[in-house]
Length: 123
Ligand SMILES: [Zn+2]
Image (cartoon, rainbow, N blue to C red; front, top):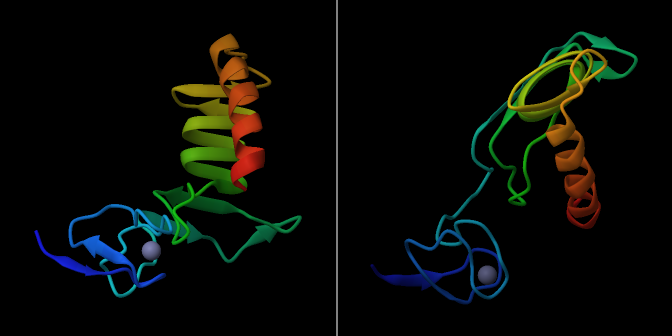
């Protein structure tokens, strides 16, 4: 373990730190950070939403990537058709905590209620 400087604020950080203790930047020892995970959206759009949006991991601000498309695939997704760990699928949803017109998982409803409060402060 060695000390280096944070890319964002210049403060001293460990070269293994996942987050800067001074400013909260993710992986502060890396010269560049474009987030973790993967994101892809289709060129085709319907009503301004990508036909398919796949989003996994976190963006460079360290926020969760959210799949928002007609077909949304990811850890957290909102779409007409959603395949996600946590998702809202209007027509069809598949995942651990999913709410849709067909599946009304009370756990998911509670989860989203709690999550909404947190999301509003994060996003
Ligand atoms: Zn920093």
